[in-house]
Amino acid sequence: MTTCPQYHFCDGNTEYPLGKLCENGFYGLDGITGMTEKANCTACPQAVFCTSGRIVGDCAPGFICVEQADSHTPMNDTLADKAYPCPLGFYCNEGAQEPTKCPPATFTFEIGAKQETECTICQAGWYCPYEGTEPVICPAGAFCGFSSFEPTYCPEGTYQPFDNKGHANDCLPCKAGYNCFEKGIGNLVSAGDKYKCPEGHFCPSGINIKPVKCIAGSYLDSLTSPTQAITFEQVFIGGSTNIADNIEDCSFCPRGYTCPPGTGYRYSYPCPPKYLCPAGSGYKVLCPAGFYCEGTGKGLKESEECPEGYFCPAGTDIP
Image: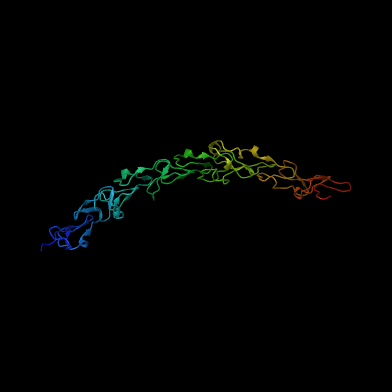
């Protein structure tokens, strides 16, 4: 009986001279004959591929062969974890044992990159995270220049309502009527009241402009929510008219109340007993002699003349 030749196995189902070649992805050791079963064939080792029972050569550039590679350009889904094209975000030189990550802020458009030069600089409006494999669109509230590996958030005092922006100039000065008190602000309107100018203040447009208190003797109640603006121009360009952006938006304090600087709700500070608070008062005034002042908080008249037979010195609340 003739011995089974090298690179073959003879399991008894097929007689020599036919035998069976080791399957593609496996090989027989040089000079070894007489293999009797498929299990005698050895899995193709790392960085090479095997056909016809032999190690044929190195895996092609752009591919990784861990083991059992049956082609120099393996695309067999059943070998997905053993032999595969170089994945996105990596390049694979000829015979590479593992993929090489593209440098920071670069990526590959397709699988199978063969060399570092195929790693492309991340485009403006996108960023390429080092741990990722694909570019990510730059979010609202930030900009991403060329070669960005992370977004650069717009500074305090600015906002940026759109995705896919690539320059610092895309960060806009804070809109009139809003307070851009933190970095990375995107759509001011979609945030509801978070960035709306606080009660008792007005907020001019500009970078790093802080809310300005209404002066003593005036107030500024809550205005219509800017989320009611319905057009692009209202939201991003002209703005809603229901915003507090200058001192004229502060209203005259009502009679019987005081409005210290920064007053929001007009009825926050009722005039106390013994004091008089004319319209437009920033501070209470002592009730004058000849009158008595019971205070607005009691729901009575602000002041009354002292009745006959009573004495009302300055600061009288009860004759």
